[in-house]
Amino acid sequence: MTRMLRHAISNASAIAAGLLLGLALWGLVLGVQVRRHEPGLWTVRSERLMACGLDYNGPPFDSGGAKVWLTCGAEDRSWRLWPPDR
Image (tube, rainbow, N blue to C red; front, side, top):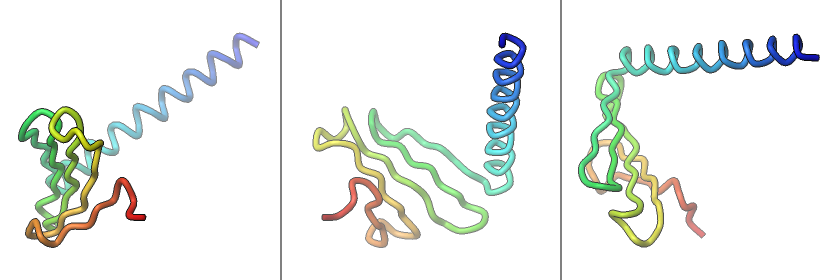
């Protein structure tokens, strides 16, 4: 039983390391930039392939709850991803 558990932990850690390395490499290829503007206001942008990104504003910046926006180009061309529109 312990041998199976060790193998499962080993496999899970290898998968997690592979996913993190893959995300880091794709981030370099796509030119991903992460910026923190203020506490609770983050932007993740991809500049090489297309000028789109994710904007997060949540506590403590916005007391109304966390919101995630997909922004392509200008600020007026954005779609709210979370919370979904009702």
